Length: 241
Image (spheres, rainbow, N blue to C red):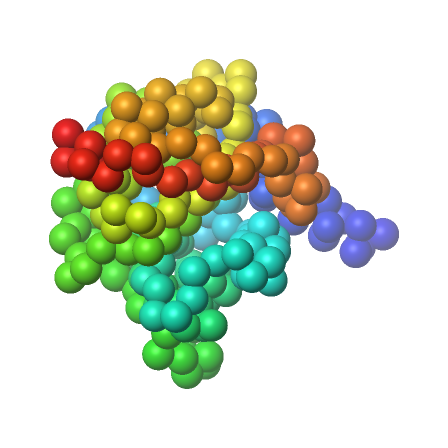
């Protein structure tokens, strides 16, 4: 009985809609879901209070599948995970020749990621506390992985998200979006999201989907709500537009 209750509580934490009190608290802490949410203050309060319903406490199962698939770049490839939070996916993606940068606007989250990953002793990843929209890395990336970042952005910021992805990727780089397709939300984050929302901001920049499929290994509360898409840019010259 106790184990059943614990499992149910864990699943509730992973539901990202208004039925989850933790999601309602996130919305309070970040100021109601307007564009002002993209300051560090609200997210710091979330981490300090332990109100992080998006955090699975482990690598995203789809990331583990991607790593095991052998389809990710290796051989000194550089990878970016924006909105990395506690950094589970950063560590999971590292190795096999890949160097992974976990980026988050929240210093508290980055400190937690560094502390948690310290025992790994690896030099194949790093964590940076900075704003995705203004951060200037020393080099561009071969791969960017986005999960629960796009859907956390106010819709008015999505075009800027697309431009930034294009700017941070190498011309022949790949963008992988694990899409959490929330619907029926009266506020956010997460905001209502459809595949067409990604296409609306990425297609004008030359990105096309090379593969899209349902996320068959989504955690139970999110099954049927996620798709994973892989994007390549046909016209690299459009990145700065």
